[in-house]
Image (cartoon, rainbow, N blue to C red; front, top):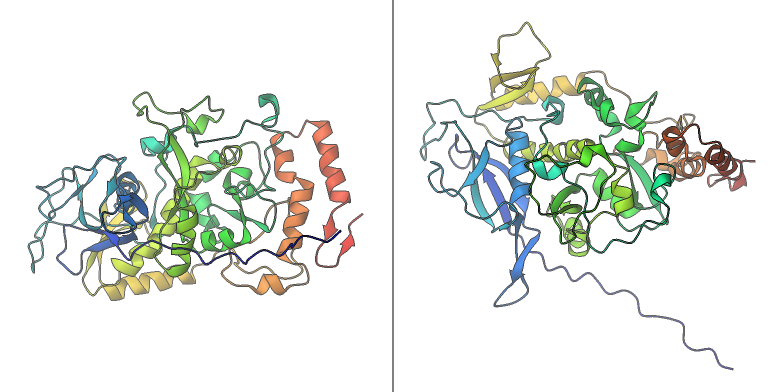
Length: 447
């Protein structure tokens, strides 16, 4: 009996339809060309074009939240206008899609516009320039970030609700639900651990944990390709309107407020950069919902912090890359210096030149922080992902590879053990997993 042909054609190249269009967020207190706050790619579909392909834009609420974050957490005060004077407000619904173009980020009760070619006599509202200077808005997240995760076309849970905590897992990609080629990373990166501690983020990690930064709520599992893009800040996860009717949500952090809108939202992929790699990723996964069983693992507050973390390099590239003086909201690390108090605690408002800001960045870089490079002899402790956030590949060349470390993590399931330490059956299964794990660096069994 002859064998049928088994070879298949190679996958075709991505059919990327995204354009170079952008939604540009401008500061009304500065004149052009020094007023660019953010330039975000138009990655959300507005609908079919009458000529060819699709028309692209940007989700209004996502863009507005990004602007509010860098405007010192101006949630509830920020809105867009078409004009610099703030007389023509944008009428697109918050759940709608903005067309590509320029939008001025206005703040209620602020008078800070500048005439073309002139500098405003009023003090422009300050911008937070770096993640280290940003203060987390405890208890003040935008409404859509407090809604239950209601992804469309979800599968039913495999395990009964009573086992929900026990079977929380980090051994599958949170986007595709595949096991192959996964990597575990942090929402708030390892090198930002000082920020994590100083902002009191441990309160959003479930259970008692001796090292909260490595807790389950701050971990994300992605396939290696996605992990690299996520690590570079090319995409984030944000809530967007969903077609699914939300069901009961077990997590207290996701409970809507009494004034929350009825329309369901789901955590989705949102691409922040417009390079070719990001465009290919956006063509495949933009607005794809996170798997429900994995969305439960991540703290909504730490996801919001990740959103902010990914924004500030874009701010430095656009707004801070100027010769004009800027009014900035900085972390008040020196209580003895002269400063103007702001609404946010531990924040000072300063006017800073481009040279002054560069010196400020150098001072931040020189400040002591946890090492971003792990030595070959240093293995992950307490069953966490270790220092996965360093921007180099030296660890991949070590005798103890990153993959073998993560294999040990997944086998021991120590993250899950912290959620239910008293479950003797689960502890035995975790120990069994450790005893049979294979070190991919040596190819030998650990038992």
